[in-house]
Each structure stands twice: as C-alpha cells, then as structure tokens.
Length: 139
Image (cartoon, rainbow, N blue to C red):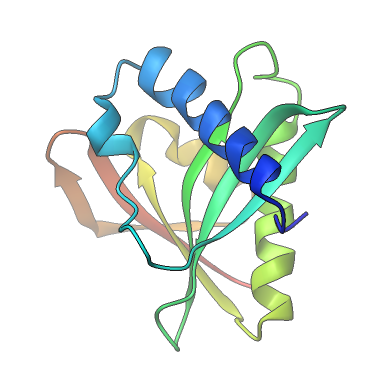
C-alpha cells in the first residue's frame, strides 16, 4: 500500500533503520537522505502494526519512475517480501502513468532484480561508498 498515515511513515523508517543501518552497517545519514520539507512517496508491507518491507518512489522525472531505498526487515528476509514490495512499487508507479522504472541497485543484489525482469546497464556501474548499478524495466 502507498502510505497515507504518519504511523505508517514511522514503520517505513523503522524497517529502513533496522534493515540497512543496523544489519548492513550503513551510516544513518547515508540511508536517510530525504530533504526536510520535500514530499516523498512510500510503499509499505505491514502486518498488525509491524513493518515488514518498504520502498521509496521517486517521481521527480517525467520519463521514468524510480524505486529507491528498498528494505526488508530482519526476520522477514528470504520470504518473498522483497519481490512483493517491488511489485507494489511497480503497480503504484504504473497507476501514476509511468511505464519505465529504474532502480539504482547494489551490485551485490542485481540478480534479484534481474529475476523480476529488470535489465542491468553495465555502463552505469559505480564503485563509491556502495558499489551500485542501474537496472530498468518497462511495465
């Protein structure tokens, strides 16, 4: 679901902090790169007030929608929630009129996105703080 309530945003941040900052040891200021006062769109999977998976939707480009900050909470990884949150994000972007979706993936998980139909752009590899590569898909 696309979040519409403040408590849902709290779950989004909880999932991202536990999954990325704590589990993957990423500095908190690198994970939480939102700009104060700017509007963001998020999708969330939750059950009974427990955040399971989330992703941020970037709709700032008219030519494509971008899925960012994908995270699955510890204890829920390997159960298909990553696939589900990507599918929910794709559905929301499609509702907003986007037919091309891009994701800046960690190179270590690019196969996950390829299994979901994304194609990696080998020319977009970056070896910065986190090694990344762009993947894209038409929906």
